[in-house]
Length: 167
Image (cartoon, rainbow, N blue to C red):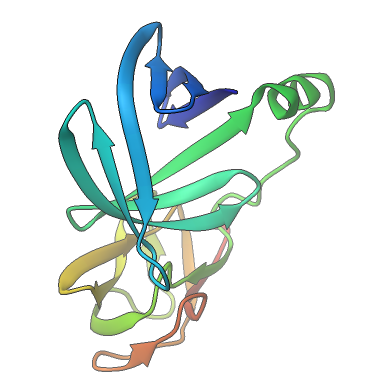
């Protein structure tokens, strides 16, 4: 099966055939395992081990938390990519909407207040999960409408942390 994976502005073509994975034309041996009941994922790639947390973000996007740093990844199969090229992916609401917890955890620090202007990539909340601190960042510039959590509060996956509005 062929996939197109985009991290930031960089896209990669990935072909999966059993345990052989070809990334941009270079074959590798890969095995991936999810830890049951958790967002933790173990990836063995050519004998090197990588561990990260992964959660679906909707529309083929995923949030990977690698060494405490969240990274948004867009994954499309060939069919989806072709359909999007014909009809478009739709319009995103940049800078507005609810920022949700990508996994259950403990709010360690709230970095913004209601009314603050934030830029894309700016930290909003620090969430501790799996003994790691993860800074949850704004996907786009906006204004903090409400802060729904406080330091010391436990949150479930999907809990609203901050609500942003375009601005």
